Length: 130
Image 1: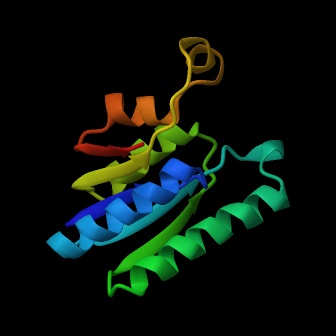
Image 2: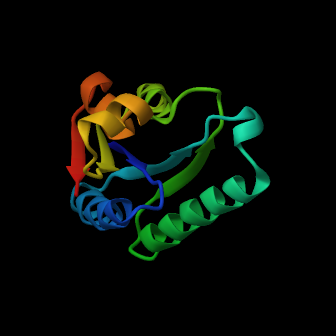
Image 3: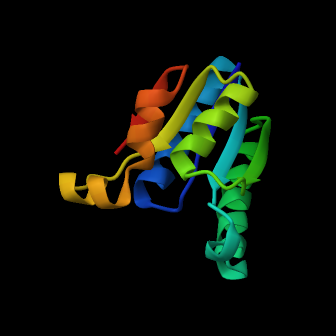
C-alpha cells in the first residue's frame, strides 16, 4: 500500500504526521512524504530550506518507527493542491493524509484551499486531520 502524506508545517500537519505514522504501521504501508512549492520567483532558498527541514523531520519520525518512506519536494509549477493530487496519481496512492486548517469562505476564495482541492479532486480516499 502507498500513502501520500502532505506536510506544510502547520499544527494540523504535525498532528497528521501522528495519524500517518499509526495508519502506515497498522497496514504496513510505504509513505511518500510530500510538500509542494509553486516554483519560480516564489520559491526562495529560505522556503526551500524550510520545506526540506519539514520533510526530513517527518522522514526521521516515520523511520524511527520502522516505516518505509521517501520524501519528495515538489516544485513543478502547480498549485499545491494540484501537485499533491497529481503526485498521488503518479505513485498510485491508496490514501492521502492531509492536515486541514479552518478558514473562512472569503479566505478560501482569495487564497484557495489546498486541502479542499485534494479532497474534491483526489482519485483515492483522503484522510483529513484537524
